[in-house]
Length: 158
Image: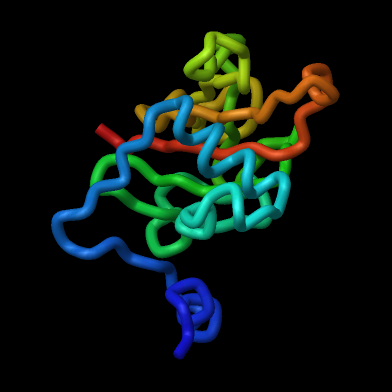
């Protein structure tokens, strides 16, 4: 019998949560239970890291994420490799120069959260939209200066 992850890969479909289940992780939970195991590729660290799909890059317009990213009813969640170029077909993600540390239960810094906003058109004169992204960077002792994997959380357009 196939487990859920194998079924998902075979069918090429996104995993959907059963009715009544909600995906509402805190910043700490996103970093510790989803991003870190994905980075370490260690399924023993988290049985749930596979719930958040991988997207090849940030080159998706936010309205194209439906069916590609995990949707919890208000936000899209996905993993991506860190990209310096956040240009999409119809616009770009602009860094708001707002980075916040994400702390673990013991008070240690386990990651960083960066905020971005989507603009339609070409940089730097694109029109700002209501689409926001929170990008999570995994931090470890050896990676504080150079994170390589990110997890993104994008709220539905207001």
